[in-house]
Image 1 (cartoon, rainbow, N blue to C red):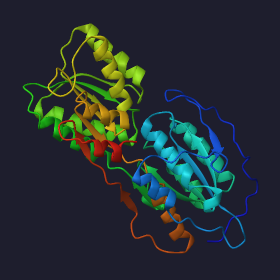
Image 2: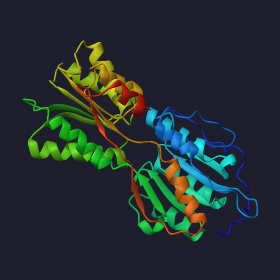
Image 3: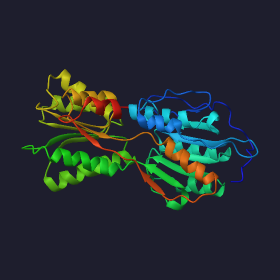
Image 4: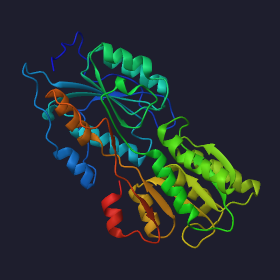
Amino acid sequence: MKRKILATLLAATMVFSLTACNSTGTTATTAASDAAATPASEAASAATDAEAPAPTADGELIKVGIINNDPNESGYRTANDNDMKATFTEENGYEAYFAYSLKNDEQIEAAQKFIQDGVDYLLLSAADTAGWDSVLQDAQEAGVRVILFDRTIDADPSLYEASIVSDMAKEGQQAVDWLASQNLEEYNIIHLQGVMGSAAQKGRSGALDAQVESAGWNLVTQQTAEWNAEKAQQIVQSVIDSGESFNVIYAENDDMAKGAVAALDKANISHGVGKDVIVIGFDCNKYALEELLNGNWNYDGQCNPFQAAYINDIIQKLENGETLEEKVIIMDEKGFDATTITQEDVDTYGI
């Protein structure tokens, strides 16, 4: 691929405001100067061991702008960010820049900045599925190739090269099918949603919403806690204070499940295998799988964060002028039941 010459190089560190998972800041920094710990996972090892492309014939590194959600949002997001930083390094032939935000408008602003500064690839994990057409059209016109990771968007597929994502709807359906198989006499559910409009929220909410409608399950409350443990704890505490009966916590990530359990513990409400409240989480953080192993939670759905090796392979093929065999790559994922999980599962799949 003919390399673009940057009119203006990005500074070694662009200054946005790094914030916690429930705030609005965006942060960018070079991957080469910010070494990341290798995640304790076979998938992570595969990512860091992947063959990376050499610098171009004229000696330039491949410039990638990586737009992600806040790495402090969850254990999943930290693992995902570390995986990206371990792969897209100067040693591997890349000049990488990172921007973080949980807000779509801030991510779009970062994308526009990367395009203006002449990156070769824009790697995107979108905060929201909508609103990306215009900036992706700008990228295409500027010769910037776009690769989606982790999350899908509602945009014409011609505007991006490939999409490496989880099947969020399948994750939700697996969890809901498992919950239905428990054959409870009644289902009174506290539903803790993630950031509204994100692919993960839509997929995990959609499966439960459909089951509620078809099977007559009762949603005691359905609120967004924005992936945040403290907000989840507050929502569950409010239900407890109201005196309304519930027997299921369906939390769309592990951190919210953790916050929900904190509220249950404070109120001396039992939870887990054979207890008063079933607890469901997603992402397979190691602490969550350990809670399953100890019988304190009931189910956890996997969301595989290790996409960097797949993206690296795609970039190599594009750089060599090859045609991609697949436009969409779906990550392989599973769900874990507290009654069957093993220590080996915790060690292998915990992030």
